[in-house]
Image 1: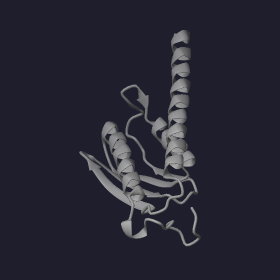
Image 2: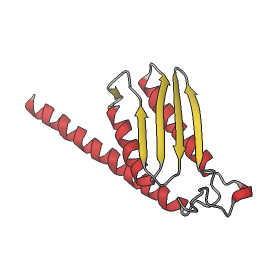
Image 3: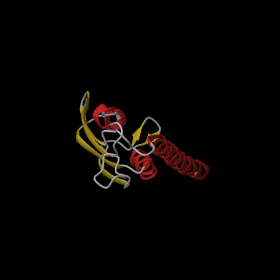
Length: 147
């Protein structure tokens, strides 16, 4: 029993580090790829339904990292994945992408649907915020001239 508990703790610690590292890598990569942000929409929000789950996501490519997380999963795991690691991933991702990201669970009873809706909502918001406005393709979307 003692070895089993210790092995579970080690797995949890490794999972946590892996999830954090993936968030860091993806966030840094996104930040580098976006560059000076000329022509991007900058802001986007999505209300995304997935079966019983409804997620609200808003993003701002401000260069000032902040994560607002208002999600409570009804279960502690989705399969073998600890649901608390969802927020850890998005915290690491947000800080390293240098974005302002708000994620709110409006409704949901199935943890799998909630998690999937979060990722799809964030992806859709990122896509929309990064879309180029052809009328402003040479302008950085800021009154300060930089983000």
